[in-house]
Length: 270
Image (cartoon, rainbow, N blue to C red; front, side, top):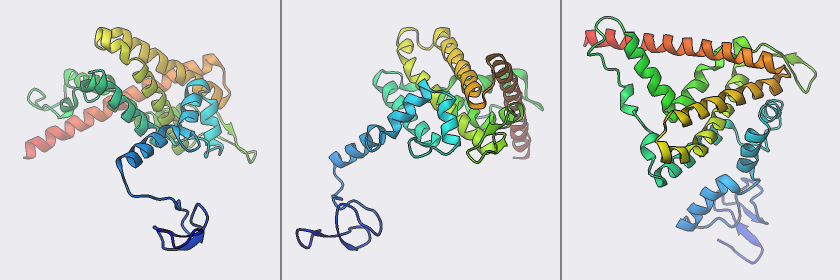
């Protein structure tokens, strides 16, 4: 709402001002009613508008792995989308593309399988039961990329103890929070691989070709990330990644065992 040619009343805080943005709250002076075009504009702006942070983050995740994470951890934040935002955007893209291509079922494939089936477990979880849930987690991209990002934080933090040079001159290892951000950015990279491999699903319906390609790329990028992030050699990064991933696998098996054990105990009480 405008009172004259120059002065504007901010629709957010009611402040009268002259210019394109309110000096009190920062809202755009051209704020309009919510229409379909406005909604579409906001959606597209999340990916390619504004300062192009989504495109820049996507490019650096794929073309500068390790260097990009290092820049972000050392304070270059404004040029990049944070990993949680990126992951949500990529999940949205994956859902749209998989739906358009007729592969929408693969996004939430076997979600119902995570309900604990206690009919054959008796008093203790069996190897078959644990294997079943492991398969669901690792074959479903929604679970596999997000769930493992949380699980791998502690194993990778324990294994990768190499210190990183901070802007203030201090040499410190990655904290748990920093390790989580590195893992979440890696999960975003894995979502790019998942989207890129969707055409293979149209040919062979996600057979071993796409699975092996995905696993190889995910491992390769993890090796590159820690090599460049911590300034270590190829062999050291590869070996430490193998150890960290093995520890992560053991931790996942242990958590599934305890969860199934707890479900059995609750089932007996009910």
